[in-house]
Image (cartoon, rainbow, N blue to C red; front, side, top):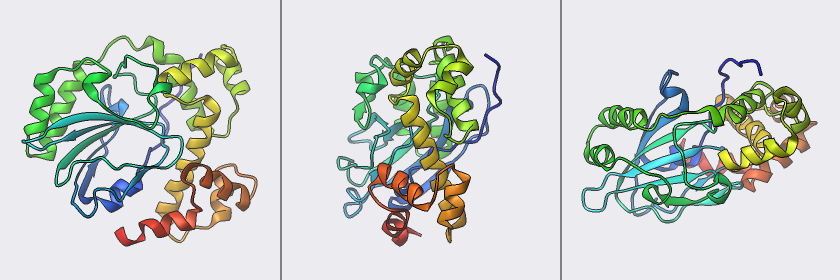
Length: 271
């Protein structure tokens, strides 16, 4: 396999960004550690907004710290296959979050990701953690300090990533082709069978190569919508390899159960 240059893909959760209180974020520059991290973010929950947002498919893993001195907690949430409501966040809590790219190799879980899709799980239930570093993150008051401490936590997790190399390479091929690649092409490029690739994808990110490719097209389309605001469905369909406008809308609804227009209207009060 030949190496592939890091490619642009950003897993987005717009309902978190636009509907939660005091939302801030930081996209780190890529480095040997931060190449795995898409985003650091922080927000607060209020009584009236705690149940008002949903997660959409992005293929990523998020770590979320509830930084409440009385009831601190750390959990992992995983990408759903379809838009799903998040109803069990703690009221009036400041949350610090870290979103990891789908191809991340720093967190080693006890279970196949296929078993964890669309779930919110206490971190200690699925992986060994350093309680001292994580406790420091929970009780820091500054967003920047939490980011710095999480970097130390990541350093303690870095290990042999060779088992991730096949999936990481294939994911970057999917990015390069904007999701417009089939598993036969991936099989030829990697030298592994379709069945083996599917198995490794489902273990590592929870999705088959086909499902993940469709998700990349969806997320890329979403990025264009937010960039343009007054977007043109035909342009988005063309840029992301959909046959026509109807095919684009059908692909969009598959993941959020809403048309692009309906989805934007659902967020409009936060703009």
